[in-house]
Image (cartoon, rainbow, N blue to C red; front, side, top):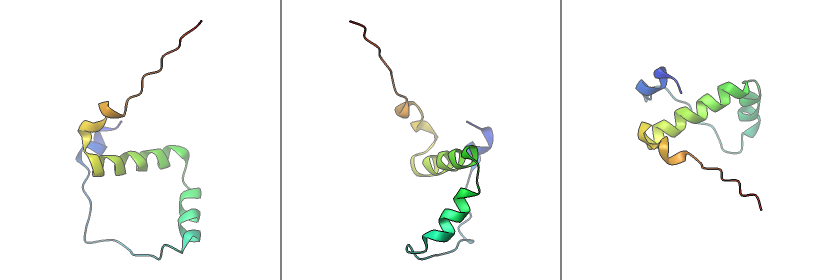
Length: 67
């Protein structure tokens, strides 16, 4: 996706904790982001959790059969 994503690291000294019931702030935050920004963040989280080598595993094959 992006070369910048290959060298990402989590800054563990800076974070915030919020209640799971506080959905308004989360909704407000993500509703202000563009679709591309949201997809980019999903990709970042995927790479943090599963590494860079999982891209091939996520590919799908579409087969069309007429008849």
